[in-house]
Length: 404
Image (cartoon, rainbow, N blue to C red; front, side, top):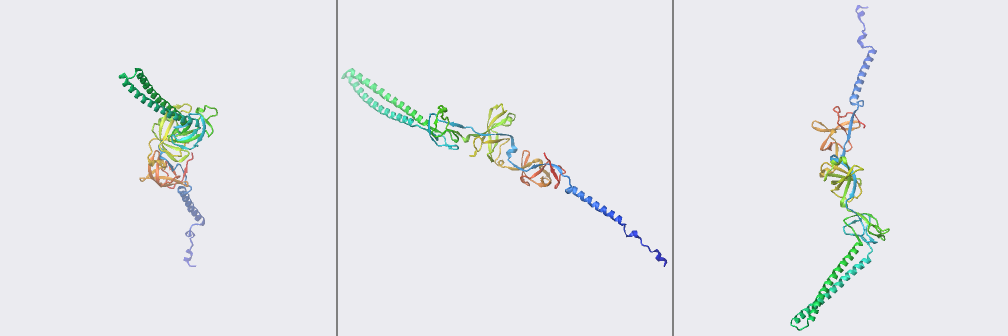
């Protein structure tokens, strides 16, 4: 064998590491990749820890809610209300109203039987005519007595008639004058009797004392109506009426809050029966006495606008406002708390919550209303936003809403 062939050898180390070393390297590479994946999931994925935040809801509110300094509840009460009854006693023969009927002042709503009163009125009218005829007769007698007096006065001056005849003419003239005066007095008496009879007839008609609506009906045709219900089984009042133009809300204000209420203070009234509308109001009166049992003071708030749907005894809520509302402030507005708005690069944003993550949403802001601000773009009603977002909160961060 040639000497050079003895130097030929195969070096196995140059072919690569042994199989065990290759497996270790592979495990290291896979472990590093797994750590990187876990770290990524921790920072941006489902393994990221959720920050606990306080949320608020974008809601539509009326500006009055932001300007209200005090809220109270009460009832709608008619300040002008009457139990309408008859001044005379009689049987009801006509009743032309029912609950809810609207009447004008002076309109007849019921009447009592009055045939005897009508007869007395007609008799008084006839007596006036009789007195007027007697007056005409007395005036004719007076005219004749005057002529005779003038004639005898001339004759007695010439001694052509006896003095006794002249005296008789004078007496007749005086008697005729008295007859005329008596006839005139009887006419006045007859006229007074007629007025009395007409009043008695008028009392048999029950009229509306003011423009209003019938609330309750107490009597029916055929029943006896008497003043104050003096007769046995008689009705004192026929109906109860209320002037709907005098409706006000009577609310109880706690003594401790009385300093927040003043005369002519602007208010907003809401009625449970008409939830879709809010009515402008104003403090009309603060009753100068307190209810010791409830420690409240009665406050009357008048309506500045009327609606046919407003009825007495409806329950109402009153918001006493710090300032009057303009026409544009009478509609509801979408708002969020000012603490939910963040400013970045001169623009307004809010962190909107969606599926346990937040999205940095640009906003278009309107005017502020107390602790709230109007949102005219960027959010819709019902969206949840983060209140007082921490500096560490970023777009896409996972969050968990605090539970109260």
